[in-house]
Image 1 (cartoon, rainbow, N blue to C red):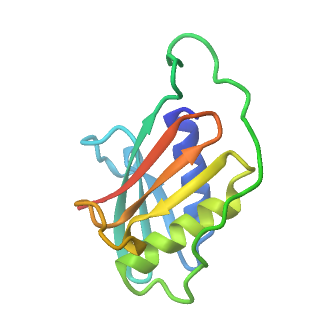
Image 2 (image 1 turned 120 degrees about the vertical axis):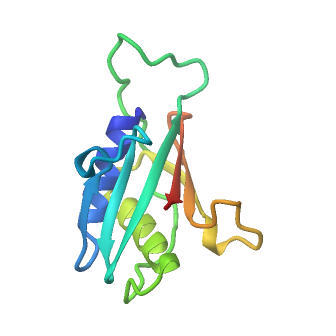
Length: 140
C-alpha cells in the first residue's frame, strides 16, 4: 500500500473516533513529515507520523498502485471507552483503523501494549498483505 492511500485510510478511521476530528499534517501546515495525521480527541491533540515501506521488489514510481491483497482481519485492541490519555488515543486509532480496513492489514503491533515499547513510545507497526509495512509514530 502506498503512503497516500494508507494516510487516507488512517484519516478516515481517525474521524470515526468518538468526538474526534482528524486532519493530515499538510492540512495543518506541518511540512516536517510528508505523511501524518493530527487527531483531536479527548481534549488533546496528537500527531501521528506515517512511514511506509514498500513491498519487497516494488518500486513506487510511474506505474499505478497494485490491486489490494485482501484476507481475514487480524485481532487488535478494543476501542477504549474514553480517549483520556495518549495510550487510549493510540489504541483507539488502531481499533478504528482495523474496523475501517477492508482486509489489507495482516498484523498489527501496538507499542504501548509491548513489554518493552520502542523509543517512540506510542504508535503501531502495521504489516500489510501485499508485503508493505506501515509505521504509525506519535511525534510531538
